[in-house]
Length: 254
Image 1 (tube, rainbow, N blue to C red):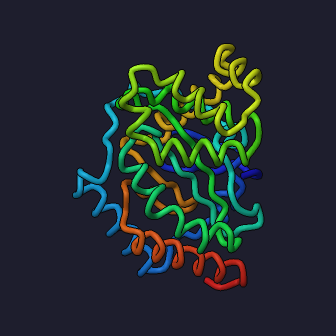
Image 2: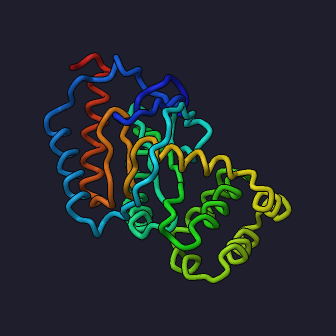
């Protein structure tokens, strides 16, 4: 996600690098149905505490610029009219539910179709056992390429209970890296030298800056954030309406 500087939320954080229209070009209002759906989705997530892992209060971070190009993993086309930033913790059960149930639908209908560019940012809330090890494993797989990341990422979600319940998660995850034929010399070097630590630290700082209090949280750029494992049907309806709104604006409509 490359481009101009935007404000992702009302929090005191200027996010540089997420490609979208400057603030003054953003719509001052959105379609009423879209607003209602967004409000409903937020209310659902807030009311159903069982569908969101709530993050403990964090010490406020000072205002700073963060370049999204240095964080996360991008999927989709840069020419997409809609951009979404997802912030999830690998240890979060509701994040796993999203990736197991809703993500395959969104991937096919919106990302692979070219409608949406999606950035996935993994961060560590500090609430889940072995999540730091899992995040490092994902980052060190990503260092070896997007296909390698996709394999590790999928397994971390699918076998979440295994690594979360392990007394020795790092060796277990190393075994998975070996099974998928990663370059183990590079992997071990990445883990031991902490080459991806700065990305993980930056992701954690970003989530505090933008006020993420639960996982998963989704920022549909230009709209209020969505929080929680929303029903797949609700998510697809929201994204369809947001994309239709973006198409109208791209065609000169109001």
